[in-house]
Length: 438
Image (cartoon, rainbow, N blue to C red):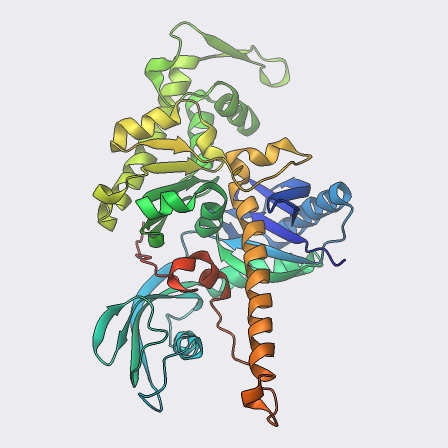
């Protein structure tokens, strides 16, 4: 039996994590091994030092291989960062006859044409997402497959990223001896791990607080509607603590994770922490109250920016599911009630355990591993689609109607991963990824 194994690789600002998984007999994701390494060559989601990033990737992969007993060669990698932008574009094709039904191949042809359009210098297209379709001037069609028509149009949201940022990710991964199977937008990967289909249907905002950035993805009616990237994350909170308390980087990080509180009113007034002095100097005493005030000020800024994006999306009053916060930054004490107080929306912490089965490493159930778990799940969705397309192609190639003809391979859409996310639109994803510069 050839067991399917998928590896997710999250190249984050704070950590690099490799995760090996398989689907067990109950349809749940079983994590076979996890590898972690400090991320020294990544800043705000962008690879700034290829050599350091390569070393960290190799370290994480080696640890994952030792834990799982599996040799890793192909990975699914996430991409994020403030360099990602978007714009709208309308495309169209003219079909041969209006007597024939519009097929998935027609949609793929139209979608793939979008990858040929000209973008800003120094950028390239990473995803093409249809908003809605137009058949012979009849607008707002979600699924035109099966309809009759000559002219097929669609409004698209085109997602681009800096060419150098993509190249640096690929170089770092390839120099570590690996190949990239999929390059996946990280907020979408996280949503696979922490959101249910019911939440996406009802309307929900996913807020993934990473080390360098905070990613936002808004779902409504089962479809992703709005996405944004805020160039602030957990690292800037650590930096504030470092300067505000005049401590070292590692001390600031420990203060944040062990004693940090998002609400200063909930912190004890008279409690202090003693920090060892440098080279025999007098220990420094840090007030828990003052530490919480530093954290609260920065988190309030981040929450205000998140709330602003939700408001700008136009879906504030449609989010019956409220907000789900995940990522390493979601583990700050009292962050959930702080979000509820500032936004007025119900909030919960997103743990990536809904699709997980029994695992050796219980740490994978923490919010900081939501993206990595999602990357593994996305890899399995891609495999399922490839098998489905293969069977469909084989069936049509050898059907009696094609007797005597040479089998022809169908053109596969470049949007394979996204076409699996929303089943209700028959492998089409409608997105509303609005561009914003900070």
